[in-house]
Image 1 (tube, helix red, strand yellow):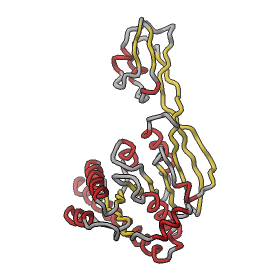
Image 2: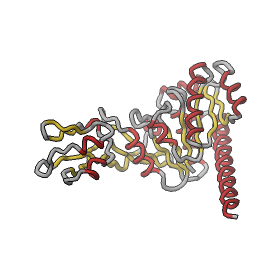
Image 3: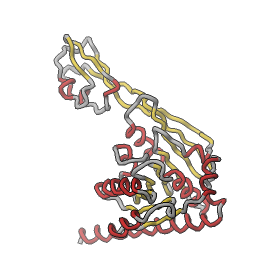
Image 4: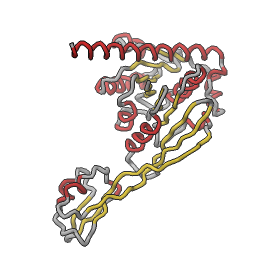
Amino acid sequence: MKIAIASGKGGTGKTTIAVNLALTIASLGQPVTLLDCDVEEPNCHLFLKPEITGSRPVTIPQPKVLEERCNGCGVCADVCEYHALTVMKGRVLVFSELCHGCGACFLLCPEKAIVEEGHPIGSVEEGVSHGIRFVQGRLNVGEVMTPAVIRQVRVQGETTGVCIIDSPPGTSCPVVESVRGTDLVLLVTEPTPFGLHDLTLAVEMVRALARPFAVALNRCDAGDEGVRSYCEREGIEILLSIPDDRRIAESYARGDIDLSKLPEYREVFDRCYRRIAGLVNEGQDRADQGKRGRAA
């Protein structure tokens, strides 16, 4: 089961909810992996404090021109959608910061004058903490290929048991890569005009990706009723409501967001996880019925 924690904007409490869902599942004796896919600013490790047991680089293929074979025909530059290659005075120039590693130049060069070399753009680290397997990605400073690092985090992390995916904020390509193919997306928001506006964008995104989703409302008693009214109109279930509790803010400031130390929240997250599991099972049952119907 793959559960993505996402939001239309930053600062809504994604990491708090992702970490505590993982801790809740681990306390039930179930295998769980927490994937920090916010690879530009990973922060789950600040709270879990895992022991890192391994690290591997993430590379993308980039072209290297074999000048002794190149005749300057310009095919490579013509097929590059990202303008990462250009031909000047019969020589091919490569702008590595623009390359997306698609391989078109390598495949279509008529002289076979281009080979591919691995260019490091980040790393994936793995560790363990509180019975939770932990995987995080780190994008190198100055690199822009965030989705490539996220893909490697998911490849390495999605093995067995439950996967909790802490996604980047927003609705752009990195978020799409994080939530693609998940069993449920929990959209975290807050009861403010900005929270409502960005929630509507996130809802449009997950609907376009055809992903099942629900909402978690953080600081639920600290704003207006706009988010609740929107969810009611759209038929969106609010699975988790967390009040504006100063103790949570104090815990966060200390780098400790294990809400199980606040007894009333242990049951809140336990109910949330059980409801998520129920929704995922219902969705799988409907999918199985649809397959049987098509087969008949």
